[in-house]
Length: 408
Ligand code: ADP
Image (cartoon, rainbow, N blue to C red; front, side):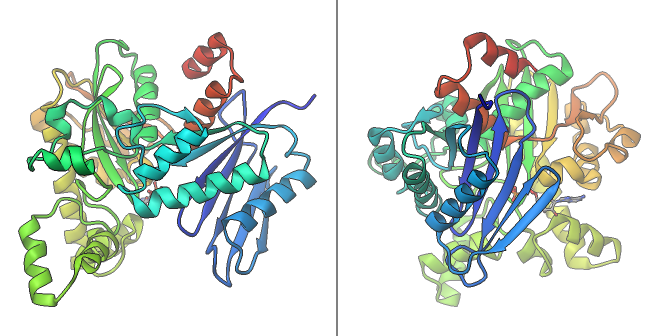
């Protein structure tokens, strides 16, 4: 009999990311991406056993992309072993405090949460329906970006707005990147030898989207993103925190409506808007090294905002054992990590420049020295975390195997 595999699906508005994981180990046997869905240039690429297979699937939507994927998996003999499908779902509102098996009730609740994240959840639902149609007898599981943060206390999640908006419209802070923060928090305890019941961490997930979270004894107690993934840190194209008065001023003077403001804050702000060049950190580092003033200033604002939020998150914790960097920028940019730690001396951090500058790509390790809290780099693995939850909820892991896998 073939060993069971877990299919992980992350469905965006015009893309479908996927991976196949075995029950043992954390290395996917296959990964891939279908992109530009709904357009003439739609394509799907599959990386498996050291080879890349890329094909045009002109005008394919999510259903056709998934059918194409499953057809290819069938040809490779990898379809039959799929024992469960895990889906990334962005917004779980207050309804979901953990991952959930997909039932008609859960689908209705994900639909209801789509009011809070229309673009994201609707895309996630398309992926779920396509997978249910293609694999009708296979258990499906939803894993929510917001679930990990449901342990935040009211003082951290309430906005200082009239209460009725919370009860009537679900207006509160939810936080995102929860699957990544949860994975990294558990890994940090192992890497640093912390007591699972007595520790305080700040995790900085810095990618195109960026958020930082305060974790006390494995539970999120505060985070920088809010009701939507727009609040908090400076991101690739998102502004992070902005005074609402600024938005009213811009709207009045430029004649922007709500949709125009939303597009401005999500798509043309952040590193891109500040630099006038790019939302990509690596490109900005290169430009800054050649004297580009906009790139230099953009990176400066990015670090300043990050440091300010780390300082604020530290005050949500009774103790601070470590700051962990993850995500594309956190894992790869020694410059951003070094400049961030240089500003955090007040919290007792001391940068180990040699360790920071030589941290190999994809590796975990400590980049601080001295008696203060530690700073470390830890690659995130959201896809594996989704596969793990999916296997556990689908009953594919015994209790002891679940514990062993998490401890591995
Ligand atoms: P997403 O949020 O889309 O998953 P990633 O976690 O892949 O994004 O992070 C993408 C970001 O990581 C980009 O800003 C990219 O420039 C940055 N990045 C990747 N490698 C490096 C590097 N070597 N140095 C600096 N930044 C990097």
